[in-house]
Image (cartoon, rainbow, N blue to C red):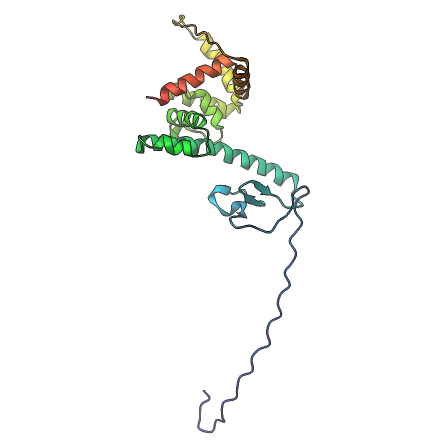
Length: 235
């Protein structure tokens, strides 16, 4: 209020003219081959959550990754590396999750695991590696498959071979090849063995061959690994 007794009556204030509405800019067109739709509930930028693991490009949906136009080859290539790391980390996460559940909820964890969309046998394989290779021995620069190759070894041998793989940049196939060469040359005496004969139909044999080929191994070696993991997980 103005000071002094001579002040005149208060004048009504004039409202400021309404601010002109800002015209919304049209969205940039989607990448060729991708139809850009309005964002649906639950759609977030890739880097907006822990699940996005800092991808920072495009938008993720439950069934899609929407990428913008004008993405450089370098950015697109780096995104592929990040996706690989995310998928590789997910194997460790799933394995550690099942190991925790088997310890904390021994009577209920299997039902919970089978209720997920994850294949239970795949989960058991992840858990076997997670249980055999302690967190302190895991190397971020190597894949989950590298660690799977050494999981059956003694802890000191795990450290040695993982260190060699990291130092020399070996692929998982190269690491497997070197492990086989060493194991074959250092046997001082033959160990007793049992020959196993199986009757397998053609359709099942084909599925086994495809699964073994996906791990760069023959069927016999693949079956031995599966049997070892199942035996270790049942302890």
